[in-house]
Image 1 (tube, rainbow, N blue to C red):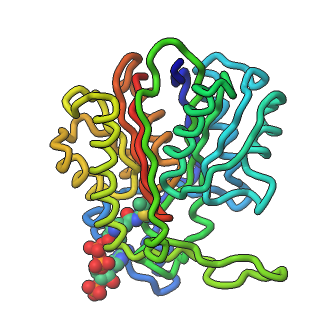
Image 2: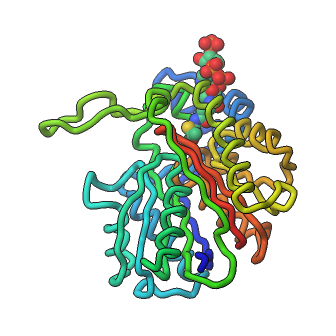
Length: 323
Ligand code: ACO
């Protein structure tokens, strides 16, 4: 028994903000940046920002509806919803439960996965395991983020990197090969290089409510983690990189993506890149890139795809599947 992806969907908020527009906004607060700096260091040209009243479950709803429509599956047929998010609507209940109500998936269990930018890969791995264990037949997996809410707009080293969005897939139990191999990892000793360290105590936010990132440490660890885990899933599926049709790494930074492709000796023409258009959307980045490439006709049915996540925790992982 396999789990197979039968539909993809995504959603971006209406407000696209180019680097020049962002630089002009930040300049009003005395924060200096430029299109040239952002583009040359990260490959990012623009990002989408959610409106103040939009939440992760709102973005997730549109992405999920698109995926269900492509899969020709009704919300009532879904028996499990997993949402990967680091920017949940509430402390509890989970964003997955809020999505379950909004979409009307009356027969679904629902929970969130918190693995920051690796969240979608963790969620897909969990969904695949649940299907193969016979616990679920049709699963909705969503990555959704309003990451912009956690950014310190006075910290130019981090605020220019991120955007908001959502991506989703529908998985179904199948006798035909779908997900071929998955691997997930963590190293909590690296929690200090990327975090939002605050918590709620006695009704107050205690600690730093903004994202902190040691960019160079993240860069170094991301490149080695992505290279290693790609090789691990290829080995687990008895495949070589040449047999892959597409590589979809976490969309954090074009330089990390290019360094990963180089480590695998994999041509950039077969790497899906959307970070230039979306910025880093954390748990939403991989399903957003996947759905973009499915809908623009690059990825077609029957092709072999390797998706990868890496992020705060430190966490990383990969899934290899036949679409
Ligand atoms: N605009 C203009 N100048 C800037 C900006 C900015 N937005 N940000 C930093 N600078 C300046 C710095 O102040 C510094 O100036 P100085 O030399 O006068 O002190 C100079 O640019 C170089 O700064 P560095 O931090 O050394 O720049 P670096 O080349 O390392 O690039 C970057 C920074 C882009 C963050 C890089 O380290 C990186 O890509 N790291 C990976 C981080 C990442 O992608 N994180 C995503 C989240 S984690 C994840 O998703 C896996």
